[in-house]
Image 1: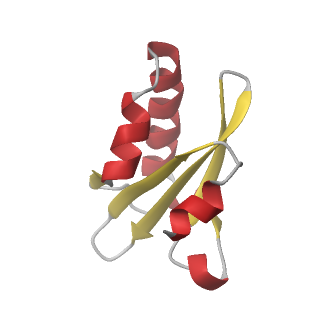
Image 2: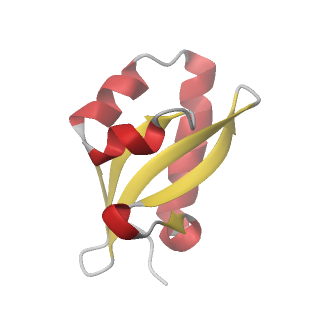
Image 3: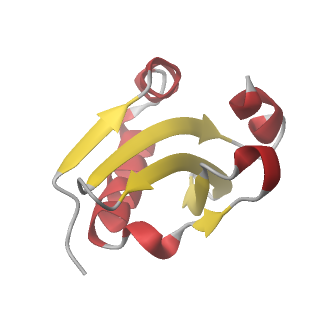
Length: 94
């Protein structure tokens, strides 16, 4: 198993991450480092969202979902969405 060599961000992820305070960004950075070391750790979705994996972690004692895709050929991790469970899957389909 190889580590991820490149991490990309979608504009919607970048916008959500920009609004976080310092403590939340620290929790997010820890989650991203975990994904870089073990990209298969997230739950793979089915159906319309088959391209998506979701990693659940705690941010300020609240469960937060981090949507990403992982390309094993190029070792690229693409961060797509960040947020609570409410409307998370509806928004990612758009």
